[in-house]
Image 1 (cartoon, rainbow, N blue to C red):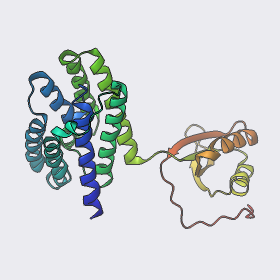
Image 2: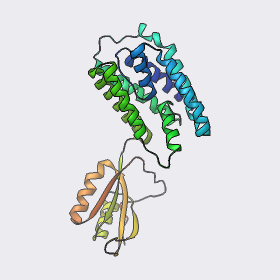
Image 3: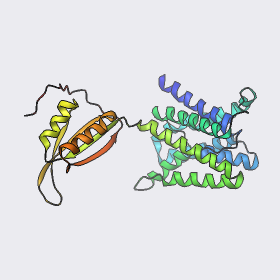
Image 4: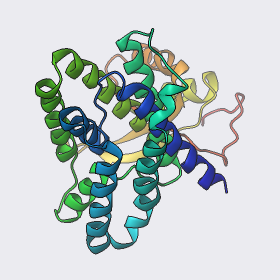
Length: 281
């Protein structure tokens, strides 16, 4: 029930953003939404009908190539165009005539990205270009996003010729916001950092991490690729607020230490209880 609610909410938000902000302000969205808007601006063709036809055709191809994966596309691919169609007249009841185009761009893009996020978190997809991307990836030995980027670049170029430079630039802002926020929603915002440390003062660094910062760590036995000498890598993950504290402490203890730091979007460690009084032997 929860999945159905969030999926429907995501579709509704995308449709409302489309009709409240993109259509009235001559903006172009991402993927098949952007292509539908361009066709509407060029010859006044119904964008919802265009999206429905394109999505239906892509779903049929997807059933042949992707098989079971197609089910995650079906509902949003058909429901979003239907919602866009039935909410065309929403501007008669809700109007934003007095707001600046840049504000409409940011709000419309953020709402669209929010709708995308709700769908992604429930294992759904917005369909359109994403179906085509998955089909292309299935037919090749490796995955890449260049296909999607190429489509969006073409959309922006066409926006320049069909509309004008100003609309193209606003549309670029909208697409960047949509892609950035929607992507972040998949993996979350990095709230932790993972450290990989090689040091000759292993005992002092371990003592600081475990007794001063009260964090656990893991040791890896490795061998140098150039020297073939055996050494250890210390790995630990901690909240971003301790990032600079640990980095500066390691460099203070061992100025020649090797430190590699990466983003961690989620750290799960339910089995370790580490007390600050624990000593290292």
